[in-house]
Length: 211
Image (cartoon, rainbow, N blue to C red; front, side, top):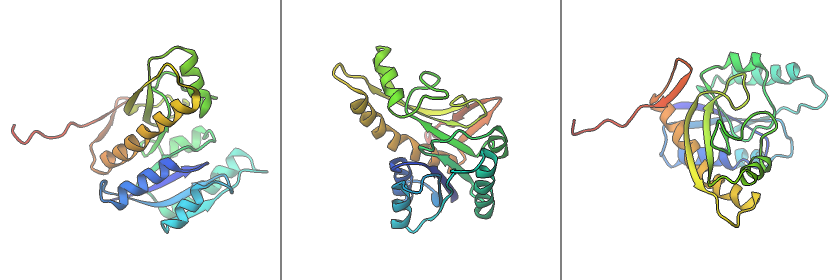
């Protein structure tokens, strides 16, 4: 079983999806730590409810380096096997990303490499998808690199874009898929089925018992 740390800034529904999959035995992983930069984030209440250690590390009045040094201190104390960015709203420095290269993943509410990059988050993503006239959208889980939303994609899920969609309705449909995709990827990592090689990531196929 692997220990998972989650970094989140908001309501924490993606955080909850990993907790639920862990507690049900669906994945061989345990969420052991939540880190948030938002003292008012509801994800803190989720951590309390499930007796998960949590650290509120407010960024106000601190440089990015100072803020991240506090995060690193907590991570080093807990030594998780995997760090998941699940709605974490601050862009991390290259130094932080390089420190945890290969064990730091992020979920993004679009089919990367489309509609990603700095400034593309939350409702902005879905509004851009609609304005572009896309017929499909979805979500992606990728390894984090110094390029915002540009790391190797591990897996994705698709949803249809409906004629009468607005950013909110599309976001809700994508969120449902996020709650399937993120635990699935965490579970695959726990089973050592995710391979990162030559700048690309992929999930090993299930073994065919008939072969």
